[in-house]
Length: 189
Image (cartoon, rainbow, N blue to C red):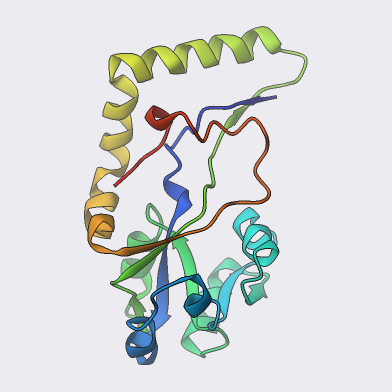
């Protein structure tokens, strides 16, 4: 049973790209989704974002090993590795010496609504309701944003989303319970 409040304010919806350095000029020319679809993305075979991007007809090369995807990018098996804004900087910094040609693409971001929810047993509707009430309370009193900023502000500042071209697409796999109209639930640059 999902509690339909994006626990990370949907920041995994904002995707930045690790790319091979020789693709920097090509990616600087991207202006829309069709331009991006000219390039092959690399993603994990079992990841939810992979299923979404395939459904949206992005050309995807799947890998079965998370660490192997970095090597696949280095060997140009695909053109970009889509990562959440809260993932990309740590991943890059911990691997940049190993994968010398890997860079963070600096100009664009892809936005696909991709919330993370808390789940409880379907048998425990009372607990689900209590968690939902508690989350709504801390959203209203500002504690939710305070906690969010404590853990994610640094990533979001590094991402400089307000200075990037954000390419937006809908997520055709979202559940009907997704509260897309509840602005206070989502991060917006």
